[in-house]
Length: 466
Image (cartoon, rainbow, N blue to C red):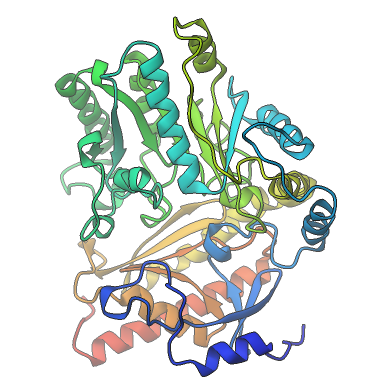
């Protein structure tokens, strides 16, 4: 592909020293006056920046461009649906794409998750799930059952309520939240477990911690446990083998709803439409999703809901209780049409391809663990996290330079790769269309980026190899 010339809009933007656009997650010192790198075009697994560099899109946008950039089938679907039915209000009408998508999702979701509420993205999906939990308990006469349990290292959204669930320290340093509603458990990351615990003992500790929390707070006050099967934005954190199954069992024993946040892991990232049952062997009460459902071509998300919960609501003594919740763009016909076509593309070989190439992706990236700066490479399917440490043998967190991830990203871009930096980590989740030779290119760029970063840190006297 020949990179096209910059458009007039892009040229005008580059002439300005500062943008009027408020960027995502700005810092106070540059808020409202920050110019970020322009991405000008894309093709399959590649994006092009303002200088014309061709970069592998390592994060697939933001875990989302699963079928790749510039997919003609999805572009045609966007156009055709817009020229048929552009929009219909979800408040008192419905539309055929939404009805069809709901059926498709129900057929593929595990257990009795036969219903879906469609939203505009991941945050609104998790927010909807929480509001439905609150409504559910109010209607069945348990208004005191409102506490939400999440984990350190988790990420569930950017709205006021969903951000309150987040377990990454930086999410709460300067931001308020509904902390009175949330209890957080230990991050289930074996890499940073206490030195005296085996992985099996660490798993026992985590489950027992939840059991003790239930005993302390009372099962009658805890409404739901919200968990990502893999903690994506925490650094692709992989919990011990039987942890999720045991946590699911504790929830069932204590009338606590289990919400699986599959905003990242669904729609092919782990080789399946939904990963909860197929990969982790659990049947949640709700599953939230977004991102890969449209491969990023249209903002769409949703929450799958158990038939059991709705059956209880219908049997309640409050048949006129109103779940006063909805969004202007819920069940958007264009988004739903794109999601239907996207699922067709996934099931026409891409899911199988992801399952086949995932082990090679993990195997190649794990060769980076031989580098002194790398403490662990972890992941599953087509998602991986690379954590840098001061001392790989001691597994100490890399606390000498909090920009090490950004340094690696800078050097990787020089070698044709865009990564997502997270403090001392880099996460990778390329489009599912990636092939073996492109994985080799990605691994080589990462190796060069990490080695160059190590040299920077040595030269600046910020780090010395053990």
